Image (cartoon, rainbow, N blue to C red; front, side, top):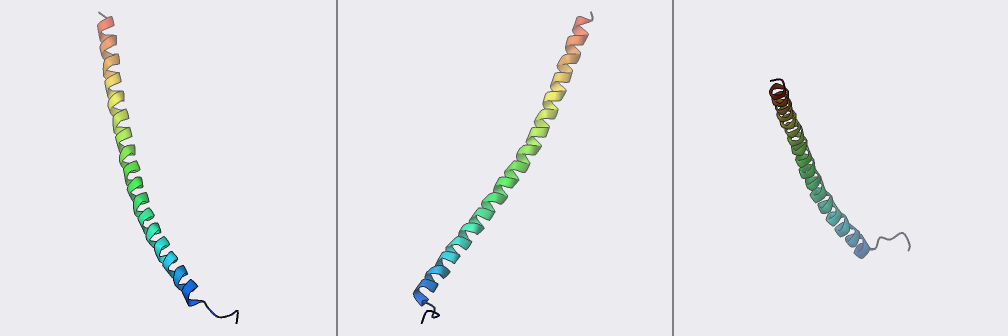
Length: 69
């Protein structure tokens, strides 16, 4: 009858679900690594901006000091 389960097709579906579950786990790990890299780069960006700001302030001070003489 049409209500019977085809065990072969059921086995294929189970295998596909297992493969997809492994892919999702792998993607989850990749996303976590990408987020960690993004967080590191944000910290690096702010540190770089602070250094550039300090250097430009120092250069501005030197130019002002040297032009006042």
